[in-house]
Each structure stands twice: as C-alpha cells, then as structure tokens.
Length: 355
Image 1 (tube, one colour):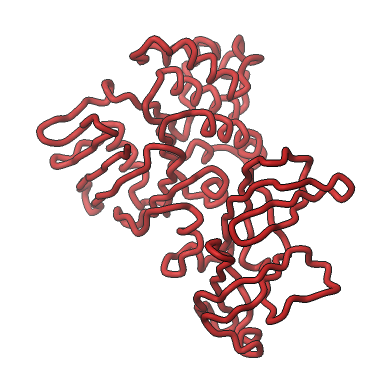
Image 2 (cartoon, one colour):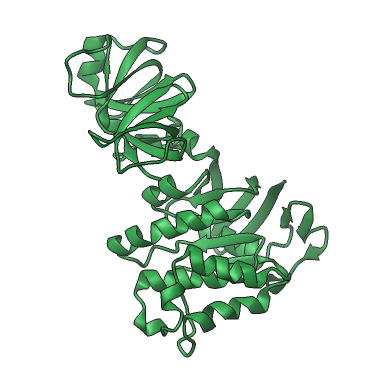
C-alpha cells in the first residue's frame, strides 16, 4: 500500500502544488528550506488545511477527494509540533493518557505502554512538565501522539527548539520508535543531519513543489539536485556488520560494492547499520595504494564529474550499485586526467556510523 497525495493550496503569494505517492512504511523526510511548504503539506495531510480539489488516499481508505473530506479529528494521525505543548496541570502520565481519548481500537493500552518504554519515560511519569528538560518534554509529546494508536505519525520539526546536546540525547529514542512502529512516519525538517540519520525516503520541496522524491541515499548523491553540491555533501550507505575486531575497536561493515572498517563500540554481527561518508573525506587514486594509513580503499567507476568552482569538482563514483561522492580539486582531476567511465580507486578517510 501507499499514500497518494494531491494538493493545490493558495495562500497569498505562496502556492503548494503537490502530486506524489509516499511509501506507507518507514520514515519519509519532508525536506527543504524555510518557506518551501513543508508544514503546509503536513497540515493538509492532517486535515488542518483545506484544498478544494485535494486528494488523499491512505492505503485503501479515501481521506479526501470525490466530495469526501474526513475532518481532522477523524483522521488517525498522531501530530507532534515543534513545541511540545504539554498540559501544565497534568503530570507526564496524565499528558500521555490524554492521547487515549483519540484511540479508536482496543490496542491503545498496549500501544501506550510500548510508547512509554520505547521513549524511556518510566521514571518520569509522576513529574510535571516544568520539571522536564526540553528533550524530555518532546519525548512525552511523541508518546502522547502514539497513545492514540495512529495509522500515521506526523512530526513537524520536533527537534528544532532543542539544543545540540538535547538533540543528541533524543535521537536514539526516535530511532527506536521508528524501527518498532509499523506505520508511516512523515518527518518535517530542514536539518540534513537529522534526515541522514532517521529517514528512509525523502520529499525534497522548494517553493511549494516537489523537486525530487526517492530513497535518501539516491537524493543525497544526485548531481542534478542541490544537496550534492553543498559543502557538507555526503553519501549515505546501508551496511551490515560482518565482524568486529576487539583489539583495535574496528567493525567490518559490508555493503553492496565493498566493505568498510569503521571505529565503533562492540556491535552484533549481522546488525543493520547506516554509514555517512563525507565527500571531502573521499580521494581518488588511479592505482590501489599500499603502505598507507587509509584503511578503506575500494574499486569504483567514475559516473559523473561536475565543476563546482574554479578550484573544486564533485565526482560521483559507483562501487557496484552504491554511490559515493568525492570532492577534489580541479587540479587533481586535471593531473589524473579523470574521465567519466574510468575505473579508479576511492580512498575513504572516514566513514561515520549513524545508526
């Protein structure tokens, strides 16, 4: 099943024109600059924005279209805003229990307990909102949304109001929720770091229109899209832990196209992980080097070369079906006589473990 979305919303000089299909599993990031229409799209899905000729079908159920408009209170969505908006007169347990009022099936109690466990709230249930940190308050807001047993979870920049330390603390809880829930999660953000860590798919918005839709790894490395040309350009790689070296603290992580050795705490062999490789940490050599401190050297094919500035180029490489970006100097590309289609070697200085 999928989520079919079509909205045409005019608000003054701004227009949202969306016609797309969203996966009904995993986390879909709605990503783009401020004013691109991310929140408007989320509100339209929740039924808080009305589009006269809008269409929204979730699986086999029509929420909007053909003279049908399911009001917001009848849509099985859990909505989490930038600000937690907890009830100040209720403790944590009371705030979470409030979500039960919107539950429409008998599994709500089990879902509520699952939310409390996944978000690590057991020791906070008797506390009042003013006794919680910003990250703890947002975890309560997410648990309250989950308590309603939604068929879709909508999060509108839930970490935007948090400091870096609070974001770092809450991200593992979000990951555990997403990996456990069997419902689609739509996650609005303009932080590429959050998206790289959490999302499976992406809708890239700009000026109210979708510029790209697809797997996160594909959009991050697409040279006809802006993300690959930014200073923080990166590749996202799904891998599997194949072994762990206790002596040196290195995990061997296998992916379609090769293997990386990554510094990490002990990991379970067979675990699925996500890696981040920055374009600036990938160099290119014509021959496989020996006697080097770089541990990760893999054979690749040059797919495309794009000149960024007078001094820098971005090169997209493929190790079988896995894309890697490399940011090198124009002089290096000239000296090596690099051309599209060449078989070369990528030297990866650092691969970071995201999950």
